[in-house]
Image 1 (cartoon, rainbow, N blue to C red):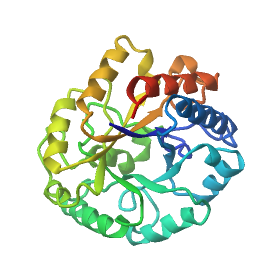
Image 2 (cartoon, rainbow, N blue to C red; image 1 turned 180 degrees about the vertical axis):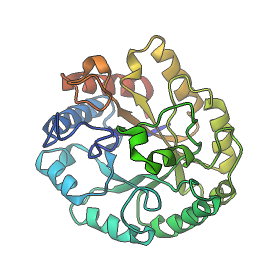
Image 3 (cartoon, rainbow, N blue to C red; image 1 turned 60 degrees about the vertical axis):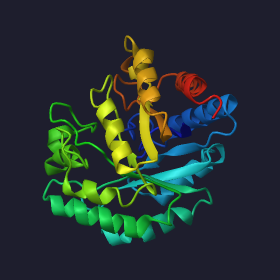
Image 4 (spheres, helix red, strand yellow; image 1 turned 120 degrees about the horizontal axis):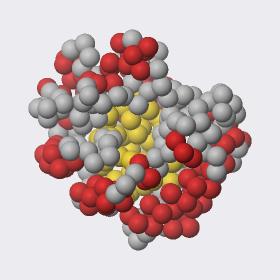
Length: 298
């Protein structure tokens, strides 16, 4: 079941939206998101629309979105936080970070990605999961833990500067409750004690061979809420709809937040998935098509 759609991912992070070069004031992003939100509403007037989770957590960005009409077009806002890996604040500051966003909007607040890597030690993730649950449960309408699987080392992380980021880059490959080979880390046993209140965010690559095993693990862990995505860029690949259909059939038993994002190289101001599209109406059309196909009657 599609629980909600999310419009883009981390728009205030240069690894996911090309600012300041292509869109210094997020005007293109705002126009695109408003059109997409209206397109989704036209297909399903009951389906919640969530503004893509922001990273860093920045109330001024939400204020900008309010001034540019985006907040009026969505039903919830979301944040991402990784205080033990990438953020310059401590894990115990989570309540304060949420309060900063609640101070500037009355919309429901989701934490659509929060996670702790095992880059340094398995024990760090185990502690971080327990403490995160203590700090966030009851304070956010939805919590998605990032992620189920480690990113395979043969796949690049979706970040702009890659190895130039030093150890920050390599932490991307250690965020899972499961190792690359599918074996569980110590925190996986704890996670099942925190479901269904905690959900999972797991991105599936095009024709991802982990899909069926992922479904088995989600069941085993007692997961109800799942966040994943359908890539506009992938939609132009051969057999894209066959893959999208297979993915969505496999995930039917979960309450899915479906994220729409990533610009096809051929449609961008620049040939990169972070680029604003030349024609924002094309992204809105993609969102409408996917909503009609997978969430028209939910």
